[in-house]
Image 1 (spheres, rainbow, N blue to C red):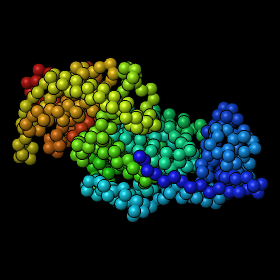
Image 2: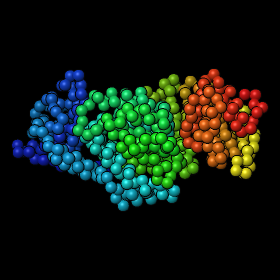
Image 3: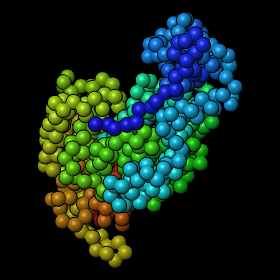
Image 4: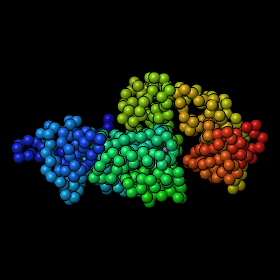
Length: 504
Ligand SMILES: [Mn+2]
């Protein structure tokens, strides 16, 4: 189902009549025992293996074709020919990228294949982006084919994971025989945290590589809270960032090797990060990931979402479920390590996929029912800019739906509950779900236009010491508060909308 171009490799006939392939040692995963080192050998048929002899970075080697694919290269399988010059290395890198069909410039035909099926607004944002996506894909590909360590951090939701799976599929097409030195890390925080940056650098310390290590971030981190982490990795690796959250003024884009955000190309947050990840994946390999792109729009409640697309809708539910899943879930649905490989296999296994879908749907339906039943409903009016708005505010305590399985998670649950409450209310609607030290807020677009979440958070921060920070999109986000003072913060929030008598 995933059409992709396989790479052709250039074999050489060496003087003793054996078919060999020439390559350059481009990365070494160091082990405390050098005999256990793992090598990446850059060639038009990239090799990843351990070796009976110790190799050095930059060694030009000749490997017997018959040994390619084996875990350990035996002494007779490989010969060191000498050190590669810079020019030889560059040539090998470029030949490799070319043989895999990776180009920095997106051809007209490729641009057409990427965009022609898209809804007009999404394609309008995508077209001016393709140049920079191509550059980012080239930076990424160089690290990938040369085996430099790469850490891919994706947000733990449908949007982030659909982006990651798309990229995983693209890489499987680019290089079916080696996965490079990639680590996939689901990121639970909305920021790129300094601790994560430290841990990434620690991983990189375990490698030597001709190309810089690389961090790829998908669907989170565009917030001032990431600045420390950006400072921490600055200059030590390349940073490729695919996100769609609105960039705050002080966000240091210029320090990020390739920062791609639809906001900079005439789009907005309704252009989901999974959709963007899909475009990136297509730039890498031409792989078809439309289902995942459509699922990401549904998962992130984008206005471009096609809710009638059944397959995408199901994918979105299952990805939402597995990314929220906790180890306390019933054993059949328990997930130990959530990687794109695991998720891709799940999406491909019809029977398991259906069973996950039904389980998740039932749990969500029960939780929504409990939400509608227990939410407190306040009605109010506001006239911003002379326009009268009827406003419904629903306040709900997440304890009524929290369960052993950890599904649904409060953030996405708030979005679903908002959608349900919108249908039950006249006028504009806001859903406020509180749990622990967090208040999650969702609004209709009309309400968010007049009262963007950032403004609400700012005003609450000014009037209460219990409000620590807040963020997200204009119509969806959250506030971090003092756990003991949730009620008083909600009271203040309601007061902002003229609701005084709250019995909160
Ligand atoms: Mn997203």
